[in-house]
Length: 209
Length: 209
DNA sequence: GTGCTTAAACTAGCGGCGTAAGTTTTTACA
DNA sequence: TGTAAAAACTTACGCCGCTAGTTTAAGCAC
Image (cartoon, rainbow over all chains, first blue to last red; front, side):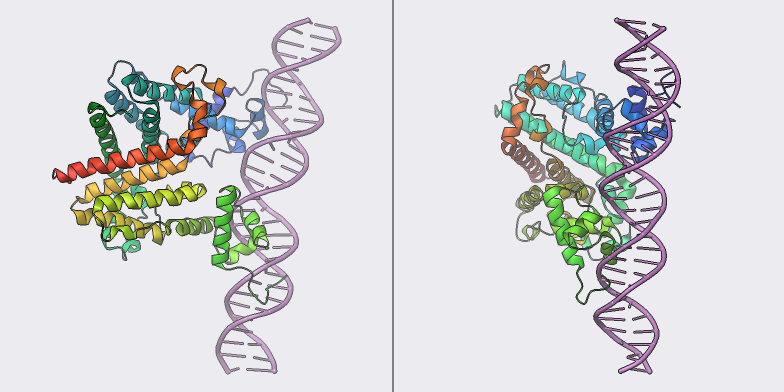
């Protein structure tokens, strides 16, 4: 086949297929040849639309980050906005866990990532936090959100009971996997509460840097 | 060459070379062939000592985690112990950032990882925290520590100043890279303070679950 | 001491990866 | 209508993890 009368590929179709493949089977499964097969095309054809594989993966990351609700920074107190944003971000990452390693390295040059950073940082600055502290708070939130999304804490423990024979306090660790949601969500909620409440206390005491 | 009079490889030598290679050039650079070259040997020879590449990488992770100081849980108040442990863990990961993605998925079956989990969880239980809360606190600490180690927040922003023209609050974001240490360390310290202080407050108020 | 088994190196090769180069045909425009 | 660009193709390069089979030395039983 040479050039078809109707183009088989568009950047949009490629990104959507890549996102679906990454969601369904993980980053490793999303190879150029496999992705092309998924689109009914040969591997190198993708290079007519993207210069590198990294560009495709980046576009998937952009698509995911764009789903985070940053409108909450308009019309809400900074504390409430931060909490709502963090929950939205957390929920989006929970829905697309396989792309998290890409997001964890920062916004890079992705518009949605930069818009999110702008919204978070701007809200903190407008609230009166110093530039340095606003940066720290932004970083801290990213640590908590991507840290929790990167890998389930509960599933990080092998389900083999014998593994824990030598560790008296861990003798029930093999049950963690069964309570995955409660463990992981509970930890995230606790972290969010602790961080925002204690930041709020400092703020109310006038400590803003 | 067939079997040499003196073995060229040992598991220990392989793991040390892998650790050095990962530290120096990253996880991707640590291929079986490259690692073998580093050891003066052909690629497949490594399979006489490890069944898979994952086993080698896991052994490197074990080596790194074993450097974390968990003796602090003996003889210290749980708050102080948690803080000292977190700082030690953070410092170890800062010294070996390239292996962090492997650690971020949890202890798996690695003895040093399990021993660390035992020490942290045990200290929290002994202090009187409920099992559920102790688990949450442990998870939370991992989120903060691996989240901050996974990728510099400061370096997550491209250094190209033009990139931020459309984002009024980010107009100085290109300077972040120059203050990498202050930004990243400041955020981690802030997070640790906030988490431990607010946990401490709850604890002192008798809220332990 | 002489076999036998196992260990530890080797070489060759499989299927997959990202990507470069060059080909073919169609489309769009001067 | 001629020409340039676009979008598919095929082929191929040098990596990758890993398997299979070969060679030689080491360790041990008799």
